[in-house]
Amino acid sequence: MKDTGWRFTAVLLLLGGLACVAPASAGIYEDLLKAVDSGDSATVMASLQRGMDVNTVDRSGNSLLLLAAGNGNRALVDVLLAQRARLDVRNNVGDTALMVAALKGHKDIVQSLLGAGAETDQSGWTALQYAVIGGGADVATLLIANGAKVDALAPNGMTALMLAAKSGNRQVVKLLLAAKADARFSTSDGSTALKLAVKGGYEEVATLLRRAGAQE
Image (cartoon, rainbow, N blue to C red; front, side, top):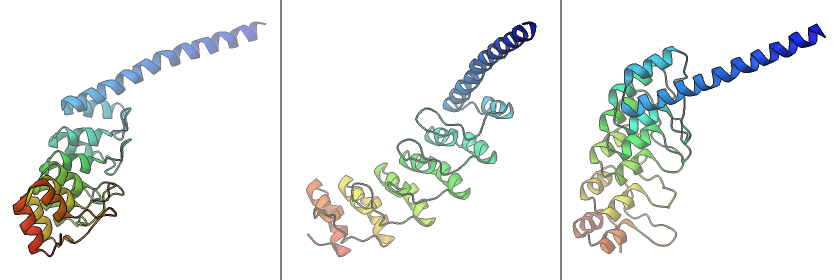
């Protein structure tokens, strides 16, 4: 009986200890995410030194690196890269740190991520397509220079050129055409870059596309 009572007491103590550990870990997790969101590099480093995983993700699957990239925090991105954060982790909707940085036009962060070896082309949406949607010619130029596929198809069936034509972004259209984007490509429903430009009333863009061989 004594032995049974001792074992029961030990189990209670163990469970009590685990109950104390769980909130503490949760607190560190929340503190880490808040630090990343606020750009507090010192707290991030302290959390990592206390054993938190540099590849921690939030409830939406966003890695610390993706969050820092999206916030435009180059210094924190470099800190996480130095700690060997995984580059191409995708969140719950398929985005990577490079894609989010490209969408938001953070050229310096895109440069850091590419320099560390981030993949330019993922299945689904690509960083170049995101850069075009974000209107960033500088980021698009950088991605193309690093081997991004200019004619990759987005999930909606469009190419980067079609996305640029649809928004009337003359600078990006000109850039993509110089990179040999296919101006004659059409989707299954017959949409082309030229048709999209004409529909949007973007005559300068339409002229560029016609000169590149696009047909109505």
